[in-house]
Image (cartoon, rainbow, N blue to C red):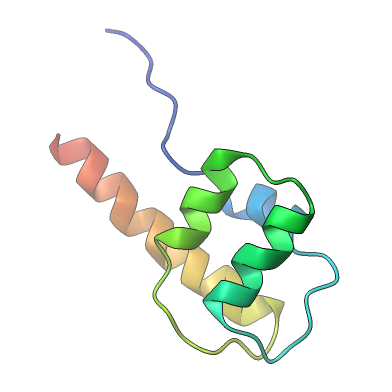
Length: 79
């Protein structure tokens, strides 16, 4: 059975590309910050699949990423 890389990066990896982001912020702010830090595509995809909301701190971001990651893993298992 071939091993497939996940389409998105793990939560803790994503957070490493968000240093310097100013809160409160939006999902677009997170994407812009990650791009400025030259985040790879799988990090950007992890941010793109998040629910759009305003984030008050990194804990909000972590919670949303964790939820999004769980949903994405469920989808991947079904395919």
